[in-house]
Length: 506
Image (cartoon, rainbow, N blue to C red):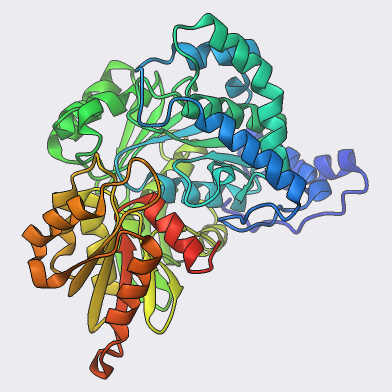
């Protein structure tokens, strides 16, 4: 916190270590000191988990086989895009599991863009203050196990399988009692909440799947509700205006909570503020109570100064590109301050060294992620116009490409024209393709829209993603004068994940 963190102690006697750490923390909030001390003595035994942000398939053939069996069973349920708006089924599952989601406090995140990056930042900040975290995000880039993380590392495949097998009898019990079986996302949500309780975690960082009010994650009563920027997406389910979408997303705001509100369209902000008043929640707004004071480009990312609820935090290195990531960082910092009671209850700042260490460690796979050089290949999971505009601005600011080739594969239910129009100013040429999922837009259909946006001479069609990558890299390399050319792969999290594997990052 505001005092330097003490070194980790020898944990040969856990009780003595616990008391010693509590004694050292007497100048800080006493309840928080006890929570931190308990978590640190636990981690003195288990050690800080290590792992990649995007894990590979299990090396053990039997484990891999078992994981594939679980994936197949989950895939047999309703997918994430088929919904029956209700929390009835997930509530029933929580009931038979003994309400695991109430075993820990939580930070709940909704919004249209930036949710996963913000969740990763919140997680890193909480870890820096020695709190044991669980993080639940979606969708995954490559491995389904990415969705459930403990202490910053994706859950081990073995533990993922065990968690599924543990709750499977209860899932089947609920299935038998409901008009519709639990969906893919509902079962995964139940797994996450059960895994967090079993760990146990000190705090859960939970990203909604879609919307808020009826999202499966919304059986938690979070003390902090985070709303990242709202824009038009999933309009067939959430509404056709920012205000309508905000109405659905405001459902995560619970009585007496603190709402951390990123910069929003005016009509969306009004809806959020009205809901906060209705439930007596406290609101902290980006640009008013917190925000980005300054930012400048740095090697491998950016250097930012953030104004939090408790003061200013200077010279923070963020190893991510784009102004949108700096704003995500401000939101994440304010959320963690609010979780610690800073601003409303206490007038103090968090330890700047811990903040710097946390942000410097943040990874966000598939978000302006460089995966190859000569030529440089960048991946970004933008899948709607607002995300595409942020990615286009970020890549223009951080990279000095003489020529940029786009590889775009989208889902069929997105505003594809809006996404392509956002990228048109920065792409010299575009290679349209499709990923392997049933939701993928047909490459020829995508090409027809791309020709209207870019013109026929700037569009190439390669239905197979591997061929599309090869074609784009060839275009980037074809003339010596374009030695500074690059490739941006975008349009869908699925497309980015599959490209990541093809480029050897899996």
